[in-house]
Each structure stands twice: as C-alpha cells, then as structure tokens.
Length: 371
Length: 98
Image 1 (cartoon, each protein chain N blue to C red):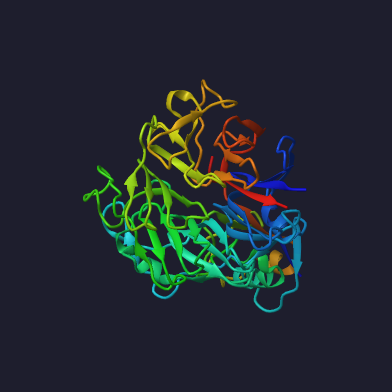
Image 2: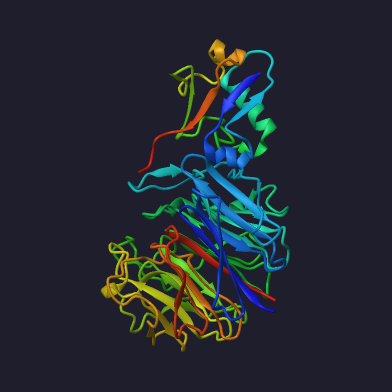
C-alpha cells in the first residue's frame, strides 16, 4: 500500500503529516521540538526512515536531529559547524567587508544513494557535508572562494537555502544563495563556479548582469532531465536548458514574477508550479487571492489554480522551501503558508484542500512517497 | 555537588528534569561547571556557549544567589553557596524577541 509523508518545518516545531495513496485523510503528528524554529526536515531517498531536521533558536543556537524510524523518535547529532581554515570576509551592507559568522542551517539534503551522507546549506552562506549520519560536519570551503568576497546578505540573511543533486551524476550539485546567486560543482564540491548568466537584477546590483550577487530564491529540476533547471528569483521566473550555463526568463503572463518556491510535476518535466507574490515589499498574493500557477509548457504560459484556495482577503506568504511534490499517480502537490495552512492537491493542482489550517508559520515542506 | 537549573528547552534536549547535579572538585567556576555539564550531556554543547570561542551565547544568562553572573569572567569563582550546593546556578534564556 503506497502512502505519503509530508514533513513540515514551522516557526515553532516540526510536524509529520501522513496519508495513504488516496491522500484524502491525514494523520498529524507533532509538534516535534516544540518551540524551536525548524528550518527544514528532509528524508533520505536511500532509506525513507532516515530523516534529518534543522532545529534552531535565537537563544540556544543550532541543532541537527536525526530519526531512524520515519520521524517517530529523534536523536540530536553533531551541531558543530566550523568554517574551514581562515574564515574570510564577505560584502556587508555598507560596502565594507564583514567576517563570515555561522548562524543556522537552512537546508539539509541527504544523498540520493547513501543515508549517512547529508549536505547542509548554512547561513552565513557555506556548504557542509557529513558522511557519518550527522555525527560530524566538514565544510566544502572552495564554494566561498567562488567570489565570496562579493556576496552580500539579503534582507533575510545570507543563507545557502537550496541544494539540488543531479541524479545522473553524484558529483554534480547545484546550490543557491541569497544574495549571491546559483553555483554548480562538477566534482563533488571540490570546485565551484557561479552559473548566473542571463539573470538580471536592475536596481539591486550596480551591474544588473553581474556574475554574482543575484537574489535567487529557489531552483529545482525534474530528475529525468537534470540539465533543465527552473528558478524563482527575487523577481523573474527563469529556466536553463544547459545545466545553468545560461538562463532565460519564462515569467510570461504571471500576475507577478516575484515569489519564493518553484516545483516540477513528478511525471511531467515541463509542468512547473509557482506561487506569485505581489512584491518584495508586500509579501502576500496579488489581489489577496492565493493562486498557484501552473505551466504545462515549461514556462511562459501559466494558468491559475484556485479551486479550494482562498480567493479573497488572503495575506499569507509561501516561503521558498515550502512547496514539494509526491511521485504518486496522479502527482500530489503540497505547500505551506506563513498563516499555518498546509494545502494539498492529489490531482496535479486541479483542486486543493487543507491538510491542516492552524500550524505555526510554515518554513518548509518536503514530501516522501512511501511504497 | 553542584546544582544547575536549565531552561525548559535544554531540559528537553538533555532529557533531564529542571535541575541536574554534578560532582566537581577544585575551583568552582562557570567554566568548570559548564565543562562538566557538557561532558555529562554532550548534546548541550553549542547551546549555552559557542563551540569554538566558548563564550556565552548572547541570549543566555547566568544567575545565582539573586545575582546576575553573566558578565563574570569564566574562571572567576562562583559564589560559595553554589560551590557548596546550597544554591543552584541558573542557566536562563534571556528575555528577548517579542
């Protein structure tokens, strides 16, 4: 019997939402780590019962939790994230250089093949890796050598928030940093380079087409086409058909091309989902209508998906890590809001219903398809 | 025997009650107490003081005997009632946020 497990990180704890393959009735477990900010919870593709969670607090700092039983029980693992070698500096808001300071883990990305290998994207932006199930962490320091002195924090901090693995090549990784841009390694993290050609950030950068400095909000891919990437930038939705070598805008008829998450249908590589947000200064949906937009043509032409979503007086946001898909047939789409709702569609987005309505603000949503 | 009272989130993390008791010899200082606390409960490393610098985290405070000891030097002796076990050292999450 197939099923799904939705892993939800919120401002005040983690929740695990479970259902069978019909995805009509849900069990809600949690909060785990009540009172803590849970930036991200993600399961291993190699062992679905192995989960990792980023637990953080302004008082007590960063913890990483690990579960070996699908989120029923958890144990803290190593929380020592120490930058490798000379820490160095990055650009600060006033144009001066500022030393790197570890603040939190934004993203945990388990290896596709080894449940004990997991990557961590952190703020201030850097990439760490554990090969022992989180018992120790080592930085992949050359990333910060990819013009790191020119990176500058966005309003939300300088976080490495997105890690995408190429399923056809375990040595190729894509990452995104606010506000530095997208980067790629071809050698398992030994060397990195910016992949931001085609991104334009007028009024944000002195050179709108600079090699680094762009506020990339999210990148994603379909596992069958690892050379095709989709990006939601601060403004603009873009795609790359050459593994990030170049990007072109696909915002098309979206009511706003500002937003945070972007996701791809599990079985249709050219079907893409975004949630337009009015602007960078008004983080809520245009016209106060919560609409997911779907393109079945890989961008440019978008249709609003509204059935079951609030179409008046809606002022929530959907954060960059708060949208995911399952791989059942039909594909399930899930997203969480800053108002504490987690919406699910069990038909590719045609209609939606809330799994839960009143969680703390949702920071992240991940989905595991269980067989 | 030294008594340490932890904030509720760290009690949960260490799976202990409100107060833990530590056997310590020699000079009883913040550093000695925290070293012993972290040795007994390794999951607390990094939550009260920084992993590398061992400085108190900004929103953690230390109190004992109705005194704020947060700005005392780490190696300064703690008050005699703490050293004798008559009074606990309180680790407190500072009032912050909103």
